[in-house]
Image (cartoon, rainbow, N blue to C red):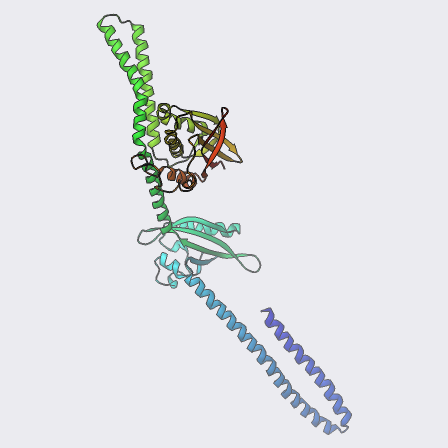
Length: 446
């Protein structure tokens, strides 16, 4: 626009200067050459016609060039508009724009498809409230938020229910539109249909949960053996006390105080059995919500579940805890600890000397750092980079499935947004040098 005004101004200036020069010099020349009045009038007429002819030719040349340039600008603008329309129409996302009253001014075919409209005439000039969409109030509120606050609302999830009652999941962004004075005149929306991606993520999540449960079930046999071991002593106590009460009754040697004490012991042991069942039941329960937990409690619950395996193999736990509060899927994190410690227990089977598992927790730079280390000699260097791969195992089929450490990696990285890695380490303990594998887990606290 400014360029066109400048060109018109240039033409006017050129015409004005040419006119002044012509009038001044032509009049001067005629007055100098001609003294007769009638002849002077005649020449002035001729000069006028000549001026009109020359100025018309000059004006034609200048205006012709102006309109040629103007047409070129129009062609460029039309070509740019054509390209922009094609880009919008064929963009792999939904694009639309509305005025300040929420009336649709334009959109591409992707919006028509998701709203089940035949053509743009069914959309342009209408509002969301004119359509039978259950989420229309949400759409209107989003528009008002963007235009009232004069700031965009980006990458938020919403749904739209189509005519056939199918619910589509959308990733939406809306930005305010301004005129050249900074006044809001409408809203522009860019929306991506992420229904398929969302469904795939749900399937992947379901498969991961299934693998987690399978990993837990894979260790069920060992767990059942642990339950049996932990129940053996309290069951013996209950049996002995009950037999004693019965025998005292038969021999008429019982007294009320003795019976009360025996019954209290029976109750205490029964409560212990019940608590053991709860511990194992909670472990096999699927975690869906993060809860506030303490690192101390997680480690203690883990050791309680595998205590028989540790005792049977004479493995000592060396603990060094900083009790840290954080949010986590408790049973999943316990599963991670169990899988790592069980691997250490299996590796320590071949060790005849002292057997140790070191567990350390501390807070470093807004991270909970958990270290689990053994003195079993370490992992072979040629396979240490593969141990988190699915179904990779050095054990035979009866002893391992190869999903334990893979699930540790999945839980820590994907579910808890942390890191897990392993190295071989040489270290000293009680004036002796040992070598073993060191698993480190870093969980963000913020």
